[in-house]
Length: 258
Image (cartoon, rainbow, N blue to C red; front, side, top):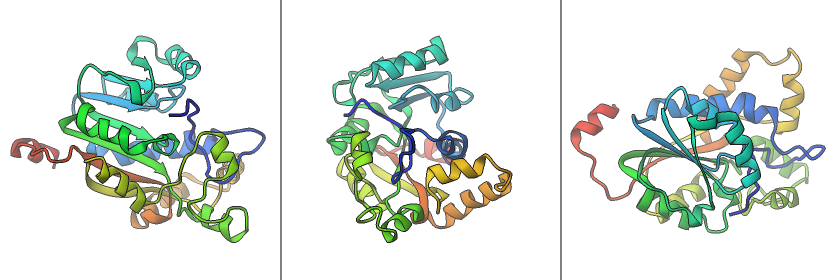
């Protein structure tokens, strides 16, 4: 796994920026809105927390939060933010020896950085996810309209291309819903819900400029999020909710989830 981890637009890096305001101020809240109905009581494991920005959003929901992050520098920043409220583990996913199974596992904009994503997903299924737990898997979407427009403009060769800028920042592939589900099921996970997060026709740097104005209202942002529920293949990010494959959850626990 590459130590560099960020949440960014698939087509553009502007003045060296990799993490955009759009990611933190728009996408992160809508990710939580997508996840919250499925949160299970108990523990949460975040795989790839970078500097702990997204981690902050889990603390109102969970008292038992563990983060695994390969970058020691990023983890130093995360520890300064959260102190003892979060258990931090500085290790590559491939080498992690975690002490227990977790009721919720979250991996957002990380899988596309991994050299062997199926191997790591298999560890989620076989070693880390509890029998009644949920795995929240989110990746940038190859078919986002902003990316398809970039193809038509000649900026990238095809929807799923890995650009030089992406490769420089650790991307190994670009997922669509079908290829993401392919890797999840290959690892033994059972996909129980598929969705998209935020309909997106503009690149992140364009969104950042718009967000500095009064052109975009909260209602417009909510509309893009709601439209994304209707057209997941045209979203900024794609979201799979998974459980451990081959595990029969007791009827009482299934009823409790409903």
